[in-house]
Structures are given as C-alpha cells and as structure tokens.
Length: 605
Image (cartoon, rainbow, N blue to C red; front, side, top):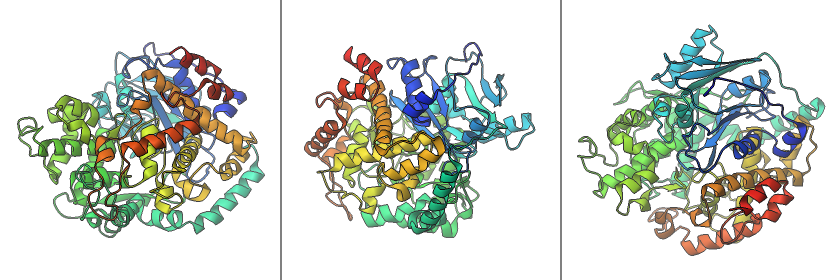
C-alpha cells in the first residue's frame, strides 16, 4: 500500500503439501513477515486474503474465503472465514491468495482482474457504508457480478472489531476490517476468467456421490439448517440446555428464549432462503420485521450468534430490534458478536453504577433498552460519545472503567465469547482458554457436546476431545470449508477428511499426515502468540465463569472452577507437547513438524 506496488510469488508443491491452503498459507506468511511485538495498526502488519484447494470447484459448503492478520482486539494471530463468491474468483484469476502490507497516504481499493492488478483511488468511497461501497465499485466497471469485499466506517475509524463484508456476509471477528482501515484500504474487488481443477476427477465424483447420498441422512444438514438456519439452535440451547447467555451471563436461562427462536423467525419474519456458492444446505435466511416498532427492518440474518449477542445478552426479546441491529452492524461494518457482548457488558456496568447518564449522553443503558443497543451502533462506528468506549471491546472498556468490571467482561484474550457456554460445556471451558483466537467457537467446537458425542460434564478425556475438534477446524480453515460439515465428516479430524481432500489435491495424505498438517499450523499460531507475550497465565476464562455456577435452569450449578481448569490445561499441554509451566510448544515437537526455524525463535525467548 505504501508504494502502490504489486508482485506475485509462486507456491511450490512442497509448501502446499506442508500447509495445505487458507489457514496454513496465511499463518506461515504472517509468521515470517510480521513482527509479533508491533501494534496491529503498524503499517508493516499484513492482511492475508486466502483461498484453499476447494474454492471454484463447486464442492458443497466451500463457497468461502479466508482472512487473517495480527488482531487489534486480541493482539495475537487472528483469522476469520466468510461466505461469498470472491474466494472462487481469486482462484479463477489464477491466485491462491492476496497479501497486503504497508499503508496508503490516501484511500484506495485493490482491483484484481486476472493478471491485471491495480491499486485505485477510493476517495469517493471513504465514509460510505459496506453495501453502497460494493455497488459503487460494481457500477464503475458496469459489472453487477463483480465480487467486492469492503469495510465500512467502523473499519475506517479503527473500531477494534470492525469486519469485512462481502455481499452481506461478514469476515466478522477480530478486527480484520480495522487493519484494512488503518492501511486506508477500503475494498478488494476480484474477477477471473480461469478455472480450478481437481487432481483425480473420477475419485472426486465418487466422493461427491457419497456426499449427496449421506447428507440426506443427517437431520441437521438435511432439515434443521435448511428450514431455520442457525436460529434453530435457540430452542436447543435456550430451552433444552439452558445455556443461552442472558443479561451479560448473569444467568444462562432466558425465560423469553421462544421470542428469539428460529421457529418464530421462520413463521413471522422469513422472506427467502439464501446460500453460499454451490451449497445445497442454504442455511442463510433473509428476515424482515413486518410490523411493530421496527417495521421494515430487513437483514440477511440474524444468525444464532446475533440472536444471542444483540438479543438475550442485552435482555432484548424483540426480533425486529435484533434484525435492525444486525442490518446496521453489517452496513457500518462491525462484528455483531463483539458489539453485542460489549454492549451487554456496558449495560451491566450501568446496572452496577460504573456508568451513569453522564457517560451515556443521557441514555438509560438498561438491559432491555433496544434503543440504546441500536442507536449506539452508529456512535460506535464513528467513535462518538459512549461509542468510543464500545469501540474498544469489553476487555479494554473494563480496564478504562475500573472497579471489578473485568470480572464480567465476557471475553478470552480480548475476544468476546459467542453463544456457547463455557460453564455448560466443559469442552468450551478448555477450548476458549487455549484457542489461538480466544473466545471463538471456531477453534474448538461445541457441536459434539450438544450431540452427546462427548459428555459435556466430563474432565477425563476432554483435552483429547478438544484437540481433535481443533485439528478438524484447522483443516477446515485450510480448505476454507464450512464447519457445519462436522455433522457428516466427524466432530474431530477423522479419516473421512482424507477421503475428501486427496482426490482434489492429489497429495495422497495418510490420516496421520493430515493430523501433522493441523498440528503444524496450530503450533505455528501458538508460536506467533507466544512471541507477543502469551503464556499459560493467559489461558483462562472470565472470573465469573470460574467462580459463579449457572444460577438457574436445566444446567443450574454447572461451571468449571479454577482447579478443574488447571487439570484440563495440564492434560492439554501434555498431549500437545507444550511446556506445562509456560504453555510454549517444545522444540522437539516443532522440529518433528518441520518447524526448526520456529523452534530456534522460541529458544531465544
């Protein structure tokens, strides 16, 4: 961005086999190119926009793209995956990914058109919302099918959880949009005229035939997600488990869960189904408020996580308000999970007297006040008034407010926790604590515990389970493939992933080789974070979760205390071959994975 220059680098087969794609490519480049000690808004930070081997071949649930950077929210390695055609277009243009560094002195956007790569002025786009930005770039080229990923004013103003929007899907978490904003990069537009081929077409067709037969037998993929989308989880989590975070996790049983349910959305708000490219599941839905206070509000969503963050966490049962909030967050360019959980934190701070009307421009920041939640979106994107505090995320906001408020900042390593309970699911207690990203349900996964494949109360064997789920998500992010496929392929990294990958890549991985790829990437991410200062002391969850059991409902009394968490950490580190005192990967493990340079870096600490 600084000197407006571009270049291309060839990917060798050896590199591709070692790191597979997406996640693996990005972390290797970012580890090599980024000083982990520098600020995330330093011009030398890198934004990676990557594809995997699956983009552009019409493989089900792979209509996605991958982004990564050093996060301004967590200060560590961070990645986010979103749906959209742009991943396939990058492949069709002849690339596996895009790396962006430096900082422009004026707003620009990147335009990739096969071999033609340009950095173009974007002064007229600066200040525009995400949807308008996409449309203006498409109009410039008279191409309504041009794929554009854009930031909104939140990214321009360095909101620490600003996201990147493609169509109306978000690379949502961790602040990738803010890093783009710091580089004065408004958007990335891509189109290509090529194709992406598979290595063994006959075996690939056999796998596709198996997929289309087997997916019909999985209720979640064949019925629940196509019918309701992810809002189907509200009934399961809110009613059956009683682990739907409410009033900033002061409780997890929301007696108005039905008001936010997928069933209610489908019956009263549904407009149409939408889908990522080549996906037969079509879990995305467009919902619109057809009457009431927020009549006319429309959004592609809200997803389950937004129903939790803008709904139950803020004590707001009005689906019209949640739809309105979801739409505004998309347009201004902010992650709905971090925004909603930060607002619920501020509502509890108001409840406890740490915030008053003097701090909130006269607004009563009470739980249930949908006006406070909705009107603060624009203020946050512009960093005005109380929005300037909200733009920092809950951890930094708690340190500004002081008192005992960090206790109820619902985050891990600075990242706000999504709608899967660290108290009700033992695997998520450990998983959030050790995850590269912190409070993410896409490092560890909760699905297997909901399904009973792993006892959610168990301690013994839980570390191995969590490692298996993290290996699975890591390979999924290398493929840039939807994690919903866990319902078919396995909640951990099973041999079925090998059967799917080998016909496409031609690498003929064994299952153990694929496990090694996952471990190589996970430990490389950990090594990056170790060099930022992360240690075992940081592998924890909020004090509220460690010390306050769920107070009511079906999971009353559930939590993971500090003694139990330490037992889980000991087990995890032993299996991972990380130092039990520091949480640093051992040299022997790194060298066995072919990361000798990384081992040498950590030995110098």
